[in-house]
Image 1: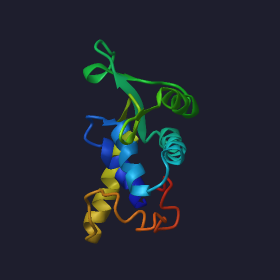
Image 2: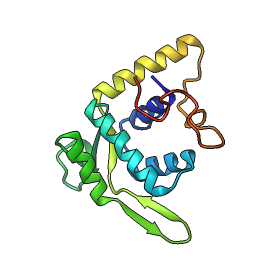
Image 3: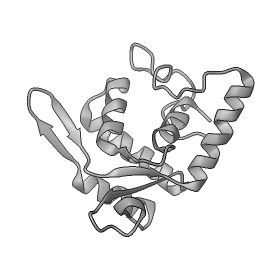
Image 4: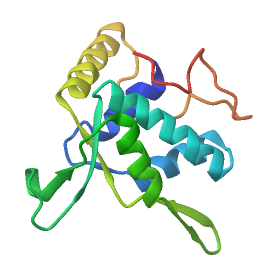
Length: 152
């Protein structure tokens, strides 16, 4: 598993969800690319994660059917990613801030892979804390082969 995939799975691992706004903002800062380019790239990453059942997407609804009001969006990965793309807004102020009013949540498959990779890293004496540093260099070039894709 590459660093990016490990970080992506770590962000949702605790089961509390990850605001897609914060997730994409962290990625945009780390990649040092324009927001529009990062938006399209993040949607591609999201489609890959959904297709492999590594994350779920949805939102909190006061009377939502799931855990603590969680309302998971069901459908084909492309349809869910399209729904996310439709709700994307850009808060233009002093700084442009992307806003995606929805959340990523963990899945059993994603948690299982994260647990396996964390154990492998720990056994190898590697860093187990998931970080975005080490994915892109100072010039925003990807360091490892396919380091900007979901790689298991």
